[in-house]
Each structure stands twice: as structure tokens, then as C-alpha cells.
Length: 223
Ligand SMILES: [Zn+2]
Ligand SMILES: [Zn+2]
Image 1 (cartoon, protein in one colour):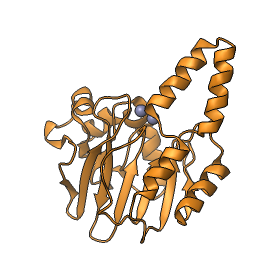
Image 2 (cartoon, helix red, strand yellow; image 1 turned 180 degrees about the horizontal axis):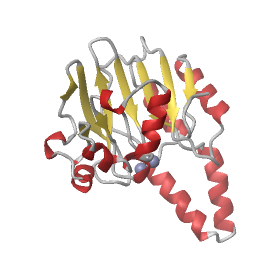
Image 3 (cartoon, protein in one colour; image 1 turned 180 degrees about the vertical axis):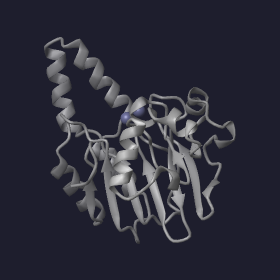
Image 4 (cartoon, helix red, strand yellow; image 1 turned 60 degrees about the vertical axis):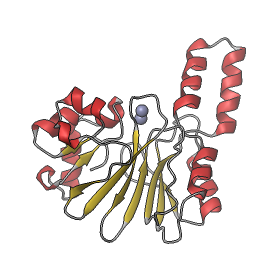
């Protein structure tokens, strides 16, 4: 399970709807310590579901320190599932992205992040889940507008986004550096409500990569 950013009961309920019991989860993995990614961490630990995260998250939720994920240290999550964490640039301590390999498929998972430096060109990804938070043009206009109106709250919000989240253009540039020769699908995550147009995002990434691209909805499902 990747990210546990909604209440445990809700995860349990959504799982049951898909025919998945919590006891069947081999491992839960979290990218960083912001609540919208790890608010159910304590529940996973108390239900004894193997829980993996960086030191910051593990210490806050009382997780097993042995399950600490560190940049470039690969480890097994289950018998046939290997994870390779790598550092990403975000405004939470030790934020990580993941390459996850089973004996059949390889997944790239990058959530909240402005960019990452890891060279992943040796992997052939079957699936990519990546953040594409905002449209640079749209944000630029909103930012200029806020500055003109002395709207300090939004100025600060936009500056935080510029500093910690991935623009559509950055997302596209990262994807272009990957080996997507056998990629079956790209899933765009974490789109801004106000500064991202789902269709434009899908089209831009499809045009740049030629890979079927989907947008993940906030409350589950894809479009
Ligand atoms: Zn975050
Ligand atoms: Zn987030």
C-alpha cells in the first residue's frame, strides 16, 4: 500500500469495496510526514501491518526503526517485492520517491516533490505514478494577480507551491528522462484544484511520451 493519508477506517472501507482486507496488506509505504500522506500511520503500526517510511515518520508514529527507508538503500517489502527509495525535493524532512520492482513489473512512484535528482534511466518502468501539481502559466497569472492585490495569504501559498511541488512542465521533463519503452500507463497525482486542468495535463503528458495517461481523482478512481 502506497501512502496512508486518509483515516484508517476509510482505507479499510475502500479496501473492502475492492475486495481487499487489511490483513492481506504485506506492507504499507509512505513518502513523507505530511498528514495527507501519513495520517493513518499510527493505526497501521497498532494493527501490526508492516509499515515502512523515513526516520521522521517512523519516530512520530512509533513504527519499527528497522523499517526505515533511506536514499538508495534497497530492501525487500515482501518475498518478491523490492523497493529502492530516493531523495526528492519537498518541504518535509527526508521526503522520498520509490522505485518498486516485482519479478514481473517495475513501478515509479513520486508524490509531493518539486524535482528529484536521482538518475533512473537504467529502469524500464511498466507504470509511473507521479505528481503534476500546477500549470506554470496559470500559477504565474494567479501569483501576479495576488501581488497586485497585496493578497499576502495567497502570495505565501503560491510561493510555497513553487518551492515544494511539481509543475506540469517539470513533470514532463522528468518523464522524458525515463525509459518508458515498455510503460503501459502514467498516472498523474496531486493536481491542484485551482491551477490544473485535467485534460490539458493528460494531453501534455501523452503528447510528450506517447503513453496512455490518466489523472488520479482526489476521492479515488481515475479519469
Ligand atoms: Zn507534502
Ligand atoms: Zn501532499
